[in-house]
Image (cartoon, rainbow, N blue to C red; front, side, top):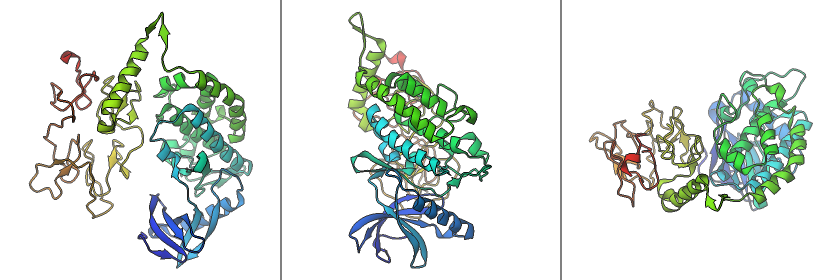
Length: 436
């Protein structure tokens, strides 16, 4: 692990940007050219001959690709005995951008660039094998560049790999070690679906997936059909490659833009607002008053109502949320419930998950720590609102968490609720209708 202000030849490390299974990416300052760059350094504990060959393979692939939407490689080689790759520094990743609402025209503009980059790679007979929001880097003026060809494979007549890739965006046949151009098409379909619907579908990828209602209301049917075909579980039913998918996208893009432009936020039937419009207005008002306080920046996969990462159930429809779907503001995720974890926690405070090996012995401060663990033997004793278990000693939290600025309590669990808006308690799943 490199430290801030540490120097690698002419590069002065400033901070860590991201960490994957094999390498860490840092922001660094080029003291000669006077610019900031991204420096990718393989982790020492995985640097065997095979891994080094993989990074050399990535360098050679990146060097031969010349496209406006593919991240260029500035240089690669050994610096102070370490193999490093130096690339242009972007503003953020698509994963970071998806933490905020994305309009349909903006999503179409970004996806056109993403699809163009993958189509170009396919024309060069290269399969990326790891298409996900983290690997699309955003630069100024909403320019997108595809990065990380670390596990990409050159397409041969018969291609077999090890099943490498990111599980959430991986095609079924790629998980079995048989990737193809159609595998990249599948991953692009999942990414685009999440960009427009705000929800990432999960296996078994039944159609329609969670969030389809929102997708149908925002997107032209022809574009939905393009996404559906890209997400086919049967690889033979998908587009043969990103080149064919790009051609279809080019034909439907204009229709999709007109549809988005003519979409009205409310609809009326005989002069009266429909039930759906009333529901939208109600949720919008809730977000205005409580959204920031409760961090309800995610959507229920069943009813698309705003939910927070800590909620066990949707407060709008009562749907149980055993697993969190969406991004997290924490640096890691629980393997059981997919909710956020800090690097120094030993247990998941949301689902009573099994023990974790802390990534660091350092005690990370956080302004979200507001409560105290009642266990006198607990070595940290600090808790965040709506934790169910202490992440340090695993003791069940007895505190009845309130909702700030609201005095309502669930009649069953006594935790704080917003009875004015919610139909169900998000902490114990019980109905709140009897309170009204």
